[in-house]
Length: 166
Image (cartoon, rainbow, N blue to C red; front, side, top):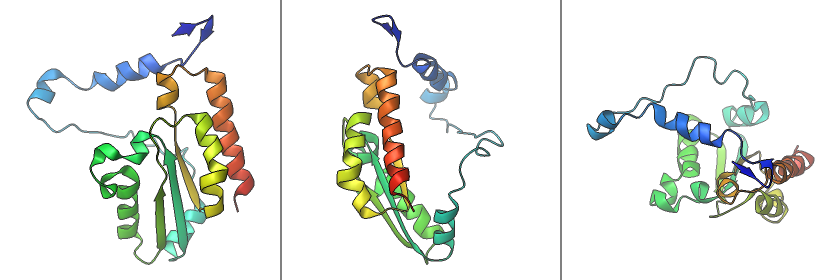
């Protein structure tokens, strides 16, 4: 999308188109289960989070803060246990029963990257979490936020978390 001579959210249209490629109408109508396969090696570049992994494995204290918009808040899920942070908590507790695990859901509908950055100091940093998961971008895309402003706000959030980290 081009607005005022500036390219905004490049690739978003392609992402939406690609998301729909594997969903044929007959498969959806027939109620056929949809496979969500992940290519081999997809996670090879992902960070390993060694301190968090070690604390989980050794029964240590692990606080995970999930901060984001409506997808994190999860009102449509029906209950806190069914939100993705709730499911993450249940999955980790099952896999690491000795860990002193807390997952805090700080989701808030219509959260933008700028408001997320402002909330970190007020709502997150004093909790001294082991891990913070940021879910942001949907509201910014819908509001056609300038991509440079979005990137700057996300970078500010990352820098705040790194400065406060262990």
